[in-house]
Length: 76
Image (cartoon, rainbow, N blue to C red; front, side, top):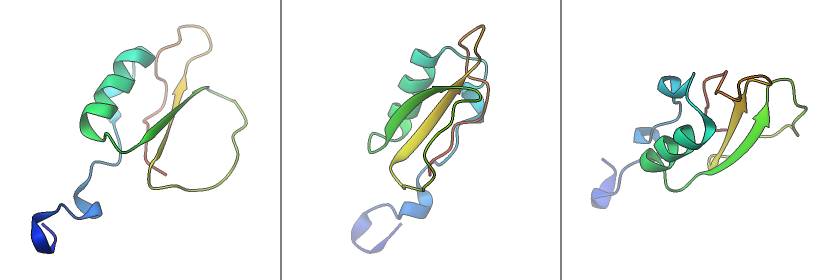
């Protein structure tokens, strides 16, 4: 815990391996339940995405055929 009782950013969840294989909607609900402060982008595996890191940004990559989450979503 940080001074004043607020959680330090290092204590916040930053990856969701448990959503791999889930549909995108279910994955987004789980991620938002853990981190209300993040913005989630939906992509298909192989999509070109702009480079850059953001501590409040999660990219969700789905399989082209099934639409299921194919890679572990991470903050950044």
